[in-house]
Image (cartoon, rainbow, N blue to C red; front, side, top):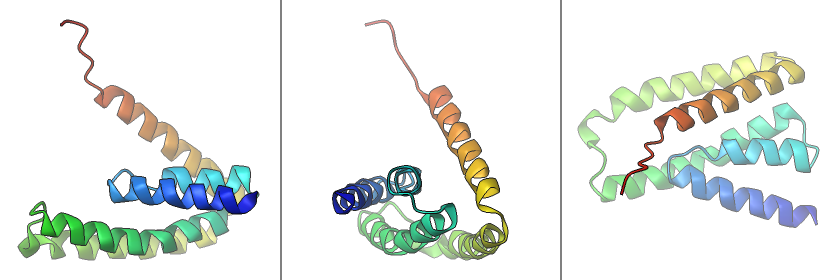
Length: 123
């Protein structure tokens, strides 16, 4: 049964990650809540899973003409640096603190999404 949970988590995380929505918002909670994986392992797994998703997504978006290749370094280099620093910080934090910070992040993401919705009640 856990194989199916891992498979579903990987599929939906990859799907959301490929769409630019952040696969970790699915993968980390599924790993910690449904499979009992520790917070550090779940977040490390997410970081490792993100690398191929990001490479494939970047390639697809580049081929679609959605990325200006001449300026990608201005985004890529700081993103890689932030990823490394974030990983090091996460490794130093206690699991409980990391879990709470991730929870706050998910709540902030939900609030941002809620206020970003444009609902039209008129026809």
